[in-house]
Amino acid sequence: MSIETYIIYLGTVLLFFAHPPGPSQLLFIGGAVQHGLKKATPIMAGDLTANAIQIMIAGFGLASIIALSANAFSVIKWAGVAYLIWMGVRMIRDATRPADAKPVPSGQALFRRGFMTSAANPYAVVFFAALFPQFIDPAAPVAAQVAILGLTYLIIDGAILLAMGTFASRLVTALGHKFERWLSILSGLGLIAAAIAIATRGETEPAK
Image (cartoon, rainbow, N blue to C red; front, side):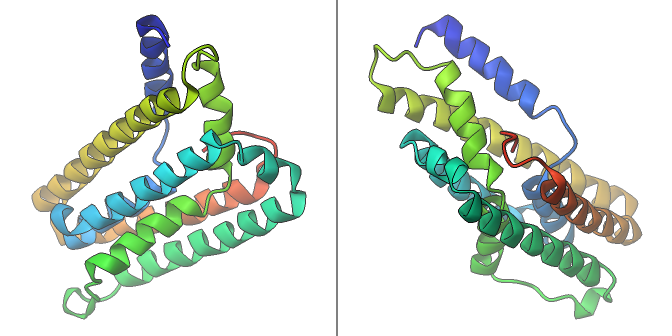
């Protein structure tokens, strides 16, 4: 993979992130608003861990098995839709509780939420499997190139998550707890909307 190809890949990934927040981003924003940026970092760690596994699955070519097995794909898809709706409702419910009655989840619980929210999207593996071959030189070691492309994606994803979480938490500090409540509710509604979008998306569309 040449430097020119890598630069094009960087631009492609940055353009991919130029859209409204997705489920994992909404979950992290909600966590940063409700619990603070530092306490919400396990959500980001869970999300990136799931992405790393999805990248490895795509690199080993298992995405084609998922794409070919309509039944397996549908099971993963609808389980993910149900999980995202459940998380959205839970976020809205927590946001409407009094401040002293809100549960404070452990780091492990937040990690699981981040991991499951990212893993709940079956399109991610198909997305990586469709993206990486466009930038891989088949004459060079493929595993090393997948590692470079995957690590680059994770770094960009993590940086964007941190930027969103920092911005949201600072807004809450500046505007107060009423804003925190409404931002958490909007994040929960966003998760439900994302679940509906996944439910209505075509099964062959390679989107994250």
